[in-house]
Length: 210
Image (cartoon, rainbow, N blue to C red; front, side, top):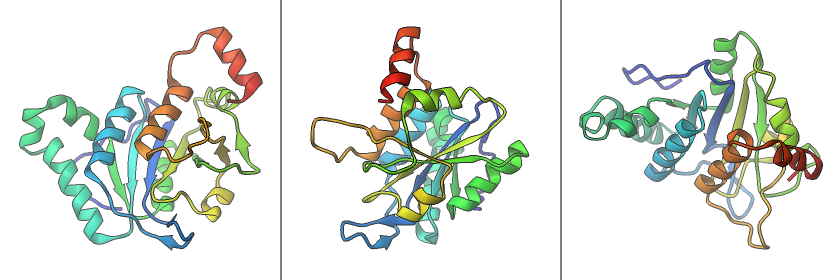
């Protein structure tokens, strides 16, 4: 696990954690690659995660240069001058952690909870394990079980990652165009899972599995 001289919050107040996976990922030729970390992804997903009360946000990459980049960004906003300039950004970036592999991040969550985390894959394509958002909201009511939701960069999580996950969330359905940026996908999914819903909407979600 990447450590960088700072205390990063990985909390048990929420049983939901998210991971932004940069490897293993498909490129457009369906070859397995490692994608580059972007400043915008770290900032915007951290803000989204903090808004919805997520327990921790893991940036996952095996590349040393990318680990150092992510650490530098986080350190600036949590410990450096950015923490004074923008305290709300410090609050959101304080839940970000860097891991070299999905398994490494998964172990940290499982060790914290003393219980195996349930891995949840996401993607734009259908999968035999697909679970609708309404049903998955019900599963999240098991507050004694941690859930680790994985989001892919590039052209998405590999088949192996999806097949080895406990659940695969149903794809977000638009109007034909199917290339949401990962930051938008995270925001939509967290809202569907953790946002406020009245009883009639919850029942409709469960029936339709949107």
